[in-house]
Image 1 (spheres, rainbow, N blue to C red):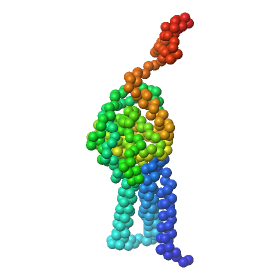
Image 2: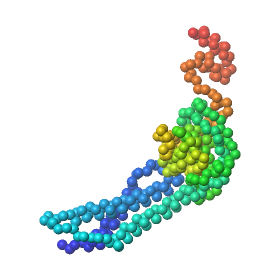
Image 3: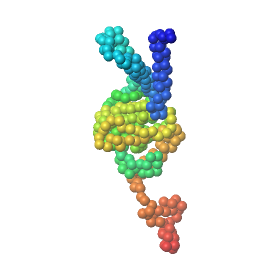
Image 4: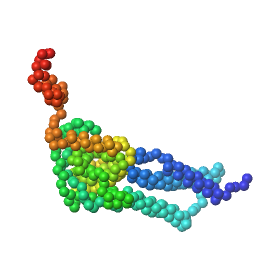
Amino acid sequence: MKQIPASLLTLIAGIGITLISFWVGQHHNLLPEQASEQAPLVDNFFNVMVTIGTGLFLVVEGAIVLFIIQFRQRKGDESDGVPIEGSFSLEVLWTSIPAIIVVGLGVYSVVVYEQMGGFSLSAHGGMAHGHASVLVAQAPGDAAVTPLISETTTPTEPTPTDAPQYGIGATPLEGSQAADLVVNVTGLQYAWIFNYPNSGITAGELHVPVGKDVQLIISAQDVIHSFWVPQFRLKQDAIPGQTTELRFVATKPGTYPVVCTELCGGYHGSMRSEVVVHSPEEFDVWLHENQIAQASGVAQTVAVNPVDLTPSEFLAPYADALGIQSEAIASLHSHHS
């Protein structure tokens, strides 16, 4: 039987490893769904790394398995193995290949970072920056619930220190164009606070419209936190005394988790929130409802359990609307009791 040339076997093995690596790189399903314009850029880079990693794994582990089989000790063979010491050409080969891969991935990562806006931070600082720390206990999505703990936020004129110096800014296509929506994000132990300077709304979860350019101005009040939305493939540290920026366009309506990825204290694991991506119409409704709910004067409203009210007290708002005197309601109640 004629032996197959080693070069042909190597070529077949190389083609097989390449095909397997490309298939694994495109079908690994290791990442969550994409929900921002920046997510495909990161995913493509990750897929390349998975493809290269799979190929290297098959080459290295395949060589080990092949050598174990081919150079196993034969029956009756008690001789020593062939003494092999050093191979300059082989050392150059296994040094140059990883070096080329690392340099190539480094260049690619810089290109991705630039396309995401990593080199285009806004230096204008053109956003109002509130100084008050505001804690709001509010049911998600229910604008009718009045904040239980609230302080007044007073937007002030931005100062040079408000301009973010780190983070993900506008993409090259967006250039110096202002964002459609600016949100100030404050991290503190152990919550994220979202303030909308143009509308005066403060919330415990982030609400944004789909398809709009959103700019987050991130800061921290106490220790370093890290704002991360896995579905957006975006993460940015919140640093005390230094504002950072995160700019993105959400592409899919839904609710996604906001996670702090910087160990920030004993209850770090509980520092979670949500980003709710609305359609433009739903976002306008949410904005309008919250402007009413957080308007001056309404913030002083205290939630009262209706069970604790008398019938007259419970019906008073409705009676006023209908023009009925409270004495008439009290008289009617006493008549039926």
